[in-house]
Length: 340
Image (cartoon, rainbow, N blue to C red; front, side, top):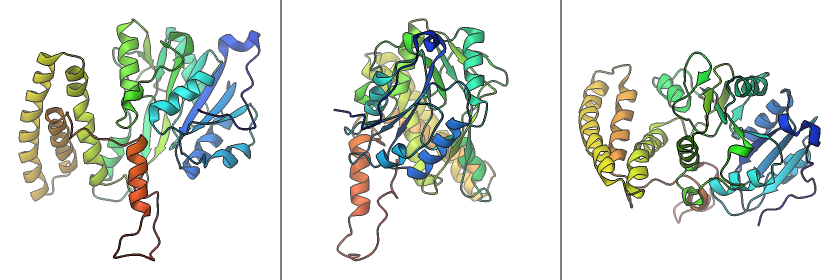
């Protein structure tokens, strides 16, 4: 069961509740990123509360959040059952505000971010508002820096407006009353991710209004171990699995077969093209290889190929990373080197 520690949430005054905004930051063993994210919330206007939900078994962020000084109430929640959906659900269940703004623990919101998100929500009476994400990669001078920056960034329309589709939960503002429940994220996605896709698909089907706030970007800091093909190709493969997995597990077998067939063609064409592109050192060779990986994911979307990046799978990776082998006992190990 989650706990709130010694500094519980203070509910907003009734008169202010209609405009109240709770910012939620889920976190997992990322103290530097969490510090940056929390500091960035302090320069925003309109923050009613900040909730930090720690999904590490040992609640490692508790003293960091307890020591954080902010001009608004701050709540620390500990959700020991690892899984990204568990962390989000625990935080949402504790929120007593009219709106919820999600910021990841590797993101930084510039001044004016929340005001722009709220203004867009009011302008379009939206149930969900998404904003851009601009990635900051560690080696901007590398040959594939443009690819890695693009991979971790989120792009959308140049102007704010209504959206016929949705994005992910990082940098999003949700109307609390529009959520289907106080625990709206599917725990079946705890290890794979995509819990926000399932939620927003259901909300869209239910007629909820989604909008884009073009002037409300956040920055995402990409750690060095993620800015490499070993991570992005696996992640691209997982992104490719999305439509096939969604249709296949929901009984839409004809649509699933169509996605799989498209994946075979995409993987073959872009796979061969990537070989040529790397041979001639084409500037967009990494983008082409990424297309091939996503195509392969559309075809191989079922077990044992389903990729897992969070929850128990993440803990296992870190335990393996932290445990010395027979050949290197006595060496120092970084348990964070295989972060999701």
